[in-house]
Amino acid sequence: MRTNRLWLLTAAVCTLLTGCKTTRNLVQPVPEKSIVVLYDNDVHCAIDGYAYLAGLRDAVADTAWTCVVSSGDYLQGGTAGAISKGQYIIDVMKHVGYDAVTLGNHEFDYKVPRMFELLNQLNTPVTCANVLDAKTGKQVFQPYVMKTVGNKKIAFVGAVTPTTMQTESYSFYDDNGDLIYDLAPKQTYALVQQAVNDARSQGADYVIVIAHLGEDLNELNVYSHGLVKNTTGIDVVLDGHTHSAVSSTRVRNKEGKAVLVTQTGTQFTHFGKMVIMPNGNITTGLIKRADWTKANARVQAATDSVKNLMKATTERFVCHSDVDLRILNDEQKQQVRMAETNAGDIVADAFRIMTGADLAMTNGGGIRTQLKKGDLSYGDVVSMLPYDNNLCLVEVTGEKILEVLTANTSLLPIEDGQFPQVSGIKFTAVVADHSVKDVQILNKETNQYEPIDPQKTYLLSTTDYCISGGGFRNTLKEAKVVKDAVMMYSDALVEYVVKELKSHIGEEYAEPQGRITIIK
Image (cartoon, rainbow, N blue to C red; front, side):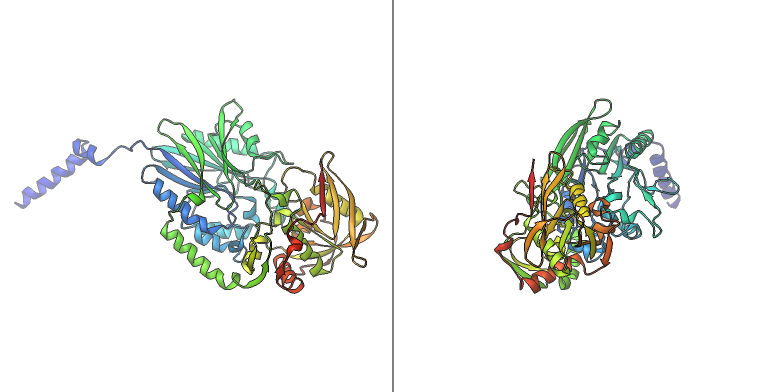
């Protein structure tokens, strides 16, 4: 009997190994299903959305192969990032299960060593083809990530806007002023093309670029539409950086083939959904976050844990506001980056008044969220001003002020993060010839505006980012610093509304106060 059992077992094993019917039943072919790539960009610390993104993936996975990717700007831009230097963001993101992420310019905000420290905890492949070691010329990150999804190979190629070297310039140099990392603006398209070619040679069926480039032309001439026009072999660009909600745009590549370009907006207003159907057709579209109600329990638990840790810091009452403090216009465009806003007015007033300066200027891109009227907490203020920026006092001539204003209104009417929000100064920007005129400075003695004197020296309050960090296109880099690190820029606003406004923002800030006039 024992011998018979052994014989039967041996026969069964042999049957499995000989490729007979039993083997065919065990090794099932991969079923033909659609491939769905869910994507985000410019989340900027809006951590409540991650559980719903993961919940969407869970639902889609019932009927399709799925991937989740990010096109950058997740570590900074809100309270959760600001008070933890990005740690709280990683604590939530690592539970989502991303298949690949690339870098946005704001991943560099805490400097590169901190970025590496955080990304190492994410347990997700990071791809970025155009980050180079300045000394060796070698790529710092993988130029692409290859994933087998169903029975297809998908290559995700990453790229970040080279303008990061201007806006976050402090992250790219050592203490001696020597360049450490290079984003290779003149090579970006070629580096992406090389990654695409390599991925195709390794058998990629589809190549998807997860880009943080933006669709708007910039001074370095590197943007997502330009990338498509100067390359071949890319199927889709999942873009970021310009905060646009673009369901699908077709751009012709170097060979005339239509390539889809899409972007989800910012702060999880939408989730992106790209579908590769079994017949090879590709579509992209957006799902409104407000229309999706299913959350992933594990990611939600991580989010709730982070929010509990934040409470003690963020819930402290600061003031009551009778008005909405706005950075967007009625078309949901970033007005703070192309015109005066009431949020810009109150922030700049805080800078000027709390430091005793003659005037204050700050870049519009440093004001990140708008606040609804009602009771405002410390967390609300930090969400508006989330960066590790300190106020400084510098001496500048009237001539230098004119230079700063001219350089940083030069892209009008295009949204520009360097557009100045001001206090103690009025001016007119002329779009036609990119000039400024009718510049007036507030006289603190008389409380009247007077024409600027190009030869006079004025005391300016602004952030250290605008002096030495790449802000204002480095036009203040050589300015004489009178007082460094006066206070955090968010704390200046807190002190202003508590001490000067007695914790009440009234109707005087209901509308922009007429400091900036823009004419065509």
